Length: 310
Ligand SMILES: N[C@@H](CCC(=O)N[C@@H](CS)C(=O)NCC(=O)O)C(=O)O
Image (cartoon, rainbow, N blue to C red; front, side, top):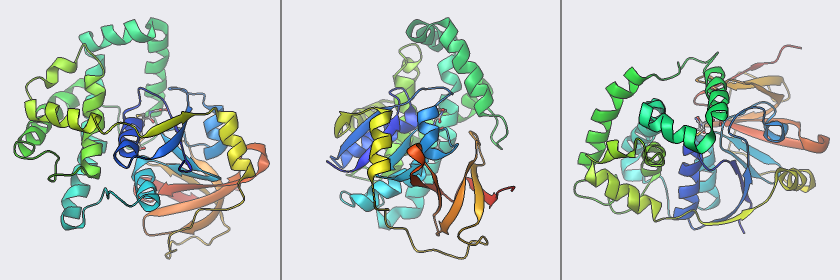
C-alpha cells in the first residue's frame, strides 16, 4: 500500500486525472470522498482554507492542486514516468491546454439543454441549483471568469480537432506511452463523455475517442475506501514529514505567518507559518485536525503567497 490518500469525489474531472495516473503507475491508494460543494469542513481542517478538488495527503503532508499532486506522485513512483524529457516543453504546453483551456471549455457544455436534463435526472433540480450557486461563488475573486457557452463554442471544436489529428498515427499524444499531457487532456474529455446528453458531440473525433478508451483502460490502481476521520487520525499519528525540495530565495523569511491562495478561481486562502519556498512549490505549517501540525504544499504557479495580516 502506498501512503497516498486522495480526497476527491467521483464526478470530479481533475480527480479523474489523478485516478488515471494512479492506474497508469499501478499504485495502491486510499480514497476519502468529499462533498462536491461547500461546506467541506473535514477537508478544510487539513488544508486550512483551500477547497478545490482533489487534495492529496501523505501522512501529515497535504498537497493542493493537481500540478503539484502529479509531480509528487512522480517523485514517489518515478516509473513509468509522466514527464518525458525529450519533449518536456511541448508536454507541459499540452498539460496546460488540457487543465486550463479545455477543462474550462468543457464546463458550460454540461449545461447545454441535453446535458442539463441528464444532470437534473442524476442530481435533482434542487441540488443542481445549489451546485450552480456554489460554482458561481467559486469564480468570484479570482482572475478567471466563469466560462460561458461562447467560450466553449470558440475553444472546443478547434482544440478537439487538433488533438484528434495529433492522434492519427500514435497511441498517445507523444508516442507509444502516455505522459502528463495525456492525463491533462483526458479529464475534460472524460467529463463530457460522462454525460450521455452531450457525449455525442465527441462522435466527430474517432482518434480522440479511441485514445480516451486507451486511457480509461489504464484503470485507477487499487483503491481502499476510508473516511475523513480515519484520514485525520493518520495525519495526527504521523511523526515524519515528506522531504522538501531545495529552498530558493522567495522574498519571505521562513517562520513568517503567511496566507497562500489560488489566483485563478477558488481563492479561499490557507494561513500558516512559511516553511519554505522552492522553485516549483511552497509549503506552510499549521495546526491541523486535533491541533497536530500539518504541512500544506502548493504549486507556485497559479498561487500567491503574502505575509498574513496580524
Ligand atoms: N488547478 C486545480 C483545479 C482543480 C479544480 O478546478 N477542481 C474542480 C473540480 S474537478 C473544483 O475544485 N471544483 C470546486 C470544488 O470541487 O469545490 C488543480 O489542478 O487541481
